[in-house]
Length: 125
Ligand SMILES: [Zn+2]
Image (tube, rainbow, N blue to C red; front, side, top):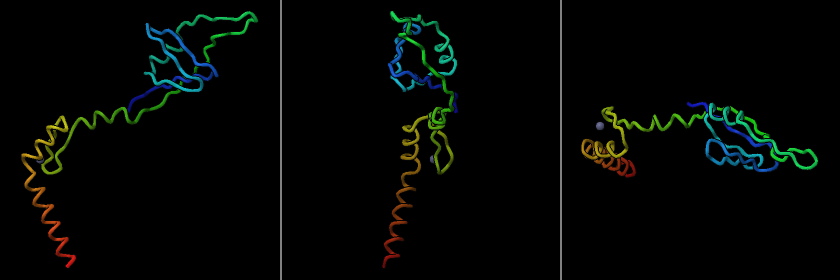
């Protein structure tokens, strides 16, 4: 699990800012996902305040940071290992796992499935 941050734009206008050489745009009442540290820096970053003729802020920073835990962020780590159900061997990739199963267990699997299929067909009689 990994801590993540949503940076919400609470305004009714899209929010755009040049941040570290990148143009970041957040649509009205939408959020972007950032690293929490990055989000904190982004919210603190200096923004030039622009006022119109009536003294109204043209580009107010109506942003809010929401922290959350991304449960899916850790799953790639888990999925990067493929464990053989038969002998418990672990493989770094799906491909390596598939090759292992084809080489070592294909006969067992085929035998088991055809045996089960046979038993089912026997049971129907
Ligand atoms: Zn195996």
